Length: 337
Ligand code: MN
Image (cartoon, rainbow, N blue to C red; front, top):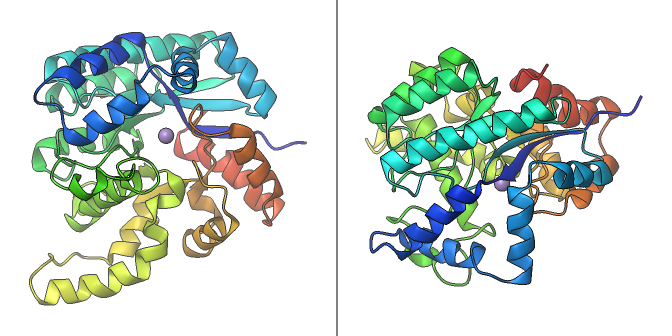
């Protein structure tokens, strides 16, 4: 029997949120990275118009594309930066409204879609309530966090209630990239570097390392984080991160942790293949993390899904590894029915 292909980083957006982005771009408080990215992705060009329509569509068009690409099940999430660039009140309302839209789409296509809930970290108490609603009534399988929120990261104690709720409810957090935070975006503003070629991985990677090095996983040992883009570069660096961390602890630059940074990465993280169709990167991830920690993702509609499928279909790995990456790991991590 053919392996079921489950893709776990598939994007959508509501028209309401896209309209709020348009408004936010005109604000004098707009973050410089979001200004650059927003102007690019919201521009009215034939390419972006097509992208927008694909992001809005949770119906027949998307299903037809999945059929033609050979995707059996898409785990959908609100596209980056979601509601995290908005004020707390608007963000909370629109996160809940987008979760309702997503839950309805999953209900209409239960064999084709599953959903990750969006929350507004700007209002942690409300985010916790929304996570409870997401795990219960809305039957969501995880939560999407598009990296920093107004320049802040989830290791900040004010966000711990969100981590605590995600752990308690068994909802993995998909830590998705966005453009770098205002405090580090300067050198990324040129040459398109704020975008996915490098800035996204730098931003999501530093977020993931902040979680590890702050000791968040000693406090929330069952918390599961999902990183896209073959782990945002971290698998490549793990040995050096451990090695240098020891020295950084000795000189008082970092705090001592009960375990090595790499051990948290191997226990509390899984990675996905989104946007990577590069054999050496997959081989490195398999060597470092093993086939149980890698999930397939296509990143529709930003990437060419057919390329992602033909990459993994043709990768020089065993059929058992292919089944884990395409399907079995996603079912385990997101508790898909
Ligand atoms: Mn993505």
